Length: 406
Image (cartoon, rainbow, N blue to C red):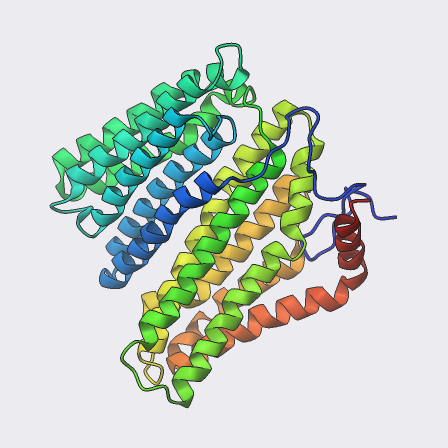
């Protein structure tokens, strides 16, 4: 029998018993609602805007700026993923607040092209409003004797101070803005760790939390498909372009497989199996924090694909080439960290594939862009095939037990 602690080198955990946890006696399990799905549509626009920012700022400063913007948007989304894990989405005020936050986030996304220029203050103010509404709704939507209520109030000063720093950075402008915004992001991320005791007071619905993060991974992977369409727009559909598009879809599908085939299900079981305080910390670490490099990796992949298929017969410059090979590598390293945080062991095949992708950077620079895409496809495709064959029995048992609910 496969125990919960048994994890194959594919980076997956086999549950000790039971299927997907539908009801958690400790937390009153719930699933993702349509309001949350509607809210997440904003991040389709946001991720597209980040990719466009990177594509139009192909230098190291532009990459740093784009990744800071992505980090800010991610942490805003994280705040609302914890919020909707706790509050009643059927409440009228909750819905109106979510809709208003959506409007604020659209403004943030639309201001991204000028985030380090004329639109910096608008973006910072809109972002601060969105974060303030998250904290306010958390306080309103939870009872005073609810552990979530006290926990968010203790963390709120750190979150709001980081938002204030964004406004300060926008007002200061110039070279200092980048460092002030980076400090704001780091404070935002560090606040739950600094107040670790307060973080453990949150009560997390495991199934809902895991499902919500899985959906945002799908949204990010969708950006790589959008990038393929953007790259192909206006070009004749010759053999090279079609081959590049097919391989691009293959790369995205391979990354999808590495997460959703078994890993996402197994991680949900792990999250549901621990006590409430440990669950809150695991949710913070494995999902809120470790998923960020995974999302960043997919965004970088989208940038690499967009630049590669736009000129398939040309050689890539350094940043697009690094995005093409480094994006999937970063994603796989995120999965390695995800496994390590869950059970404390390393997924060597995925780590090896990530290292190989980075080693292939000089080759990606030396061959035509289409060939570079083929190299990435070969690595991630082989990884999926290797895991599917080598760990077929473990995979079958996990999925069969999950499907049967036994």
